[in-house]
Amino acid sequence: MVNDINQNISSVQAAKIKLEEAFARLEKAVDDKVASVEKSKKIDAELIAAHKNITELREKNKLASERLDSTINQIRKILGS
Image 1 (spheres, rainbow, N blue to C red):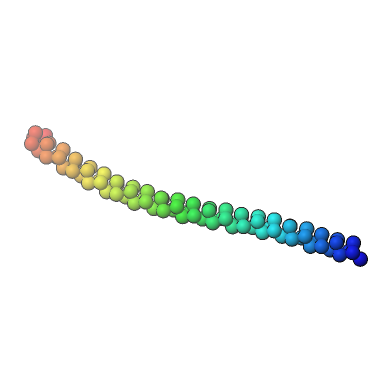
Image 2 (cartoon, rainbow, N blue to C red):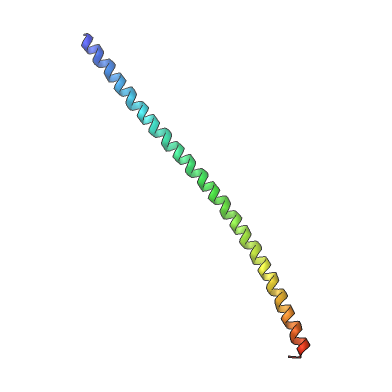
């Protein structure tokens, strides 16, 4: 009878250890997922900033191109081409 009680206690302890290990794995998986989501959000923010920068650069390029075309046309008029 004492042997049965000791065996039951051992089984409970083994189950507790397995449960704690499973819980630790679950916590790690959740932490990894949270880190992944945070990294994804950071990348999304960087991508939005890059698109905004590209749009601004395209606008500046268009303005510079228009001014350059205007200057070339004025020079052609002056030279009588």
